[in-house]
Length: 387
Image 1 (cartoon, rainbow, N blue to C red):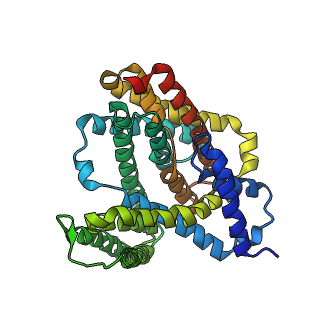
Image 2: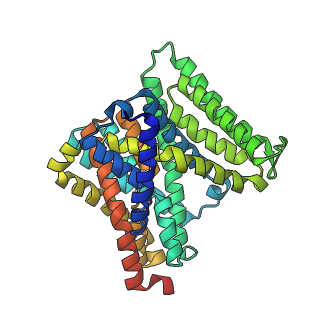
């Protein structure tokens, strides 16, 4: 009999082996967990395990850790220094992609305008984790193009997070009775107040609290993380709580410790929890619907990524030139954890069905396999790295 321990052992070793193959084509190894889950969604001999409360808990915790890491990576001071070009480009690209995406979702899948807009926004998020290694490989990270991609991608994700928070608040308030709304609002207020308080405790890169070792600091991080989740659960806003915990701790931790502790947190997140989350994402895919609706996947890819490239070309062609503005759009088309988490939250809150969820996730993952190839070929052809 296969236990959950043996199942996880098999899942991790397969993730490692398949992940090594994916990295050879410049696709993050973490997507191997998604592919394994997708295969199991067709025929799952481990259904008693993957549908068990403990597996669902680990998958859910994986999502919260990913959101925590996203918040942990946000540099609010750097955001304030964003150039006018970066801000305008980001807002226009988000606006264009949201409008065109919402039109597609509304008329093709027959969802309300609000839900259509939320789904479209899930497609806007940029997966910098995929693109930065490619920028480094072609030595364009520090060029104007490379910096534009990174800065727009960062600002894009911050706006996505703010919108995710708004959606979470609306969902949290929506499922509570009018008598519980006050408790919900108080819980949300407490989360934001604690986030600000953590930042206030750090003055000039130093904190009043003394942590003898990385281990003790890591324990404190876990305390804050789970405290925020507990408060967020009261307001049905655990995703918001996870993000705010990351933002708050990033402003609280002393400058001389932040680099090492981020490495520890990422190791725990991507080494253990994230593979389980992506495995769960794959398990919820509706493969039968995808097989009979391949044109819908192509349509989503064309509209989503086409609008990203068009928006980049419109806003950046005078600054970067025709070719580099196209590369900017292609680079910003990669998707990773943020977009998948948003669409997963919409599914879990019954705002969309499994058919639309499967189409959106499939289109995001599929184009990620194309972006590294397109990007590297065009960089070489146009000799961008030599400019």
